[in-house]
Each structure stands twice: as structure tokens, then as C-alpha cells.
Image (cartoon, rainbow, N blue to C red; front, side, top):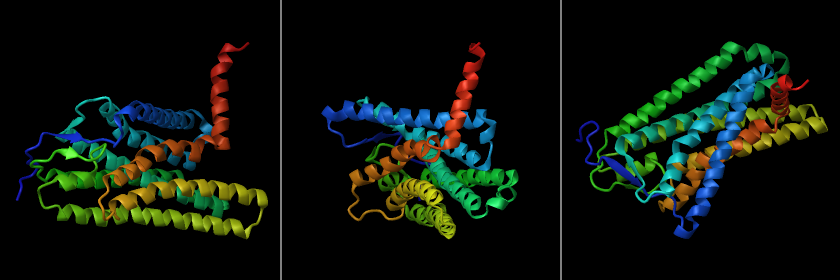
Length: 314
């Protein structure tokens, strides 16, 4: 049996995306714009919530943490991808690969738990509006955030330690644009049955159960709305719930399909496309879906902007 963290490989080569050389610059510019949009959008949300006291509510506490998670989640893979697209030798050290895998799992899991907390917050706000402040107390909100951070730390560490015990003997080319856990397991020359079992069990706990809780929350919300018919209220609620569920389905659908229901043909291109959806597209869309089109956020933007202009006006 291989010793702990024994490996004959000191670095991996990231194969990257299957892009033709003549299209390399076009896709580089596209990914750079998408990453820049993700960074600016999420930073704007974090700063607005921090600066505007009217946004110091449970919902925006969860939103600020989600924005931070999205920002970091995208930053785990995108800068390295952009660097490798301009590099002739897209290598990453062994320790750097495990570090990237750890933070990828960490911020991916954190997003999963925060989406559950946000769905529960909306469920309480719409179904029990008179008891909202009592149920969603500051203590409960902080506890939910702390629990999310704690569980994600343990889960990411578990997979990273299990990966560190494996040996990588010959092939060091990862057919992906980042150190994906599934891709690394395929390269290992050790017995990976324990890793596969833990992925399946923990995946159900970290992904499937939160997804079902979110669906249940929004189903209760829709049921509650239908009991009090109001054309304007129903349109607004269904519009909000629909957009939220679209992003949730995109995130969970691709992750569950990739890690818990792998394709039989082991299509590398398909896996990379699915990974791009939840590592690049979802973090970019979340600020627009959850916050920037929100009336409160627009008001906060106006108040913060006017506050900055006031000292210069007479």
C-alpha cells in the first residue's frame, strides 16, 4: 500500500480547454470579460451591503456571503485558466494542485449551503411574514453562516486528505482546465475505491439534500402565494422564484450530473463544458439574479453614490 502522500510526480500538466489555436485569443478575451464581470459584480454587492445600513438584514447577510463565495469560487480556477491559455507549458505543482482542489471544494460547498439558507430565509419571509424577525433572529442567521463555513471546511479537508494518500506514478496530464477531483482519481495508480465511496456518500449529503431542501422551500413559497391571489404579487414572486430556481438548477444540475452521475462514455469535453457552467457562468449570473436587479440594491447604490457626491456639492 502506498505511503501517505508518496508520489513520483512533482507537478501536473493541465490539458485545458479543447480550443483551436486560431480561436485562442477570442476565448481568452471572452473568459477575461466573464471573470471581470464576476469580480466586479460580486465586489459591488459586498461593498453596498457593508456600507448601507438598510441592507443589514438576514437576507443580505446571506447574499454578501454568497457573493464572497462566488468571487472566490471563480478565482480558484479562472486566473490559472487564463494564465495557461497564454502559456506554452500549463503546469501546476503537486501541492498547488491539491490546494486548488481544496479551495474549489470549499467554496463550491459553501455556495451550496448558502443557497439553502437563502431559500429558507425567503420561505420564512413569504410564508410567515409576521414572525419573520422572530424566526430569523441575528443569532440564527450567524449560526447558519458559521455552520456553513464549518461544514465546508471539514468536507473539503476530508477529500483533500484522501487524495493526498494516493500515488501518481506515470501520467501527469490532467484532461481538464483545473485540478478536478474526478480527473485526478483517473490518473492515480492507487486503489481509489475509498475515495469513490466517500464522493458518493458525501455528495448525497452536500449536494442532493440541500437541492431537495431548496426545491421544497420554493414549492412551499409557490403554494403560499397561490392561496392569496394578487396579480402583481404573483407575477413578482413567480419571476423571482423562477430566476432563483433557474440558477439553482444550473448549479446543482451540472454538479450532480458531473460527480454523482458520470457519463458512461467518459466524455472529457462534456465534463469540461459542465464544469464551465457552474465554475464560470453561475458565479457571474448570481449577482444579477439575486441582487443587482433588486430594488433595495438599486436604492443602496443610489444612496452610496449620492453620499460620495455630497461633500463636493454646494
